[in-house]
Amino acid sequence: MKEQALSRIKERLHYCYGEEDAEVAYQEICDLLQAFPSEQPLPDSRWSHEDVMLITYGDTFQKEGEVPLETLSRFLKTHIKDAINNVHILPFFPYSSDDGFSVIDYTLVNPDLGGWPQVEAIGDSYQLMFDLVVNHISRESLWFTDFKANIPPFNEFFIAMEGSEDVSQVTRPRNTPLLVPAYTHRGRKMVWATFSADQIDLNFKNPKVLIKMLEVLLLYLEKGAKTIRLDAIAFLWKELGSKCIHLPETHQMVKLFRDVMSIVRPESILLTETNVPHLENLSYFGQQDEAHMVYQFALAPLVLHALHRGDGSYLTEWVSTLDAPPKGCTFLNFTASHDGIGVRPVEGILPEREVEDLITSMHRLGGFVTTKSNPDGTESPYEINIALFSAFRETYHSNGPDQWQVDRFICSQNIMMTLQGIPAFYIHSLVATPNDREGVEKTGRTRSINRRRWDYDYLQALIESGRTSNAEVLKRLTNILQRRKKHKAFHPDVQQHVIDLGQSFFALWRDEEGLRFPLLAIHNLTSEIKLIDLSKINGVERFSYWVNLLDNRGVSSAENNFVLQPYQSVWLMPETVDDVSALWAPFTD
Image (cartoon, rainbow, N blue to C red):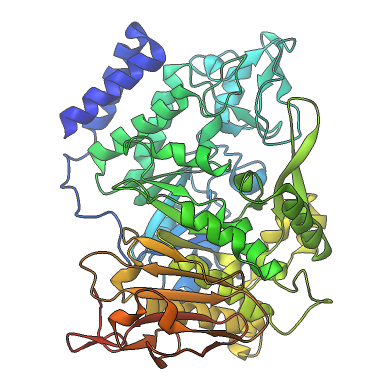
């Protein structure tokens, strides 16, 4: 396997760099790999039905006299325990802007958060995901300092231009200038900056940049990362005259990263972050030789739309058209993250009018919208910035807030947990954090609305009171996760089959040949009590009696007036199979 991976690496280098540079780079990569242990056996599967991801900043929780990474560990041990088994610590390196995504030094832990021992301590109890912020680096980094001073090799690590070049065709995820000035020993240069003037893009046309980033990748694997997230990877390779997104060389680089990981850590997972229309996102699976996992970016806006409208038509239609991920690949399903709720992923899925109405409603609920620049000089929506819990405070049809906010929010998370793939919870979803308008005013950035830093003792008091939304949401979600982890029907590889029960519902089967305990999940998307005739759902007749995993209540397969309360979810499973109880068995298969 190692020899095959090395052969693929050489082919990819030749594709991107030509024969001479490729041979030099190949030898340098071989030298890097020799420092790592020999190949380990490939596991039967990279994931299981128990896998759930938590997304958090290293300093989400702050406690006097304690570094934030230790406080994060305290929160995990106290409130999460084993309900979740994977933790994505968002960039925890020294940085200059963008809450960590403008990295000054890839190899150090930000001393304001703690150090590598604190990161590794969390890794003793949880599998870890690290960000490889591969597209750009901070203007304050030593790499860029050496670029300005014309010191090799960093004097060729960035894309320096005169400023008169035509970059009008370049895809822009922001409305900031693409080329920004830098004053160097060679005079004033305009450097490529896809995301901001502080985040300077690296020049991957120079193979020495690739070698440096592979050194960083190997360090992260050595420090315990199970999953590597390639941030903003779609923009990696640049060619003037093109859109500079999803270029063939970019895909070759992703495949090369995977090849390297397959040699040193065969069990590791490569995740690509590409906030783009759905079909473009899927291209990063390649031919089962690129990303192991991609984000399900369209899910967040579609779930929000379905519950806001009380109409799951678009969500049902979209999920029903999804192909199963390629063998050995899966989705990371999420409804909220440190970024906003992207609207580009639903291009061609939600009508433009529905997107506009959703944005208007989120404005009313205290949210913002970030725009991107288009080639014709216009701007269009890129993402909605809002805390997800606040987004469910009311609906399109309600006259202001209603009593269903918590139930509506829990329903959104239940939908995510039933879909094929691995569910990922943003920390502020778990603790029902509302909009942080104060954070926006303090930083001047709309994304800060969903990046609150909690005083740990204050949050602890809210949770311990048992009477707050924070306490209720955390308790309910961790309870559901504990129930979910027992059942193989939730394995990322088990197929899903959508059932159209009408616009008021979202329903699906998780089932496949050989699975003894199939799952029928039904979600009421409305604030009204709904009745369902279970006897008319194809497949229910296979078992005479079913049980709801979420409340332990049983129901006959012949029930023709099955009641669902507003925003209720039911996860139905056969009560017993071969004398094994779905509720009381330690594990169902």
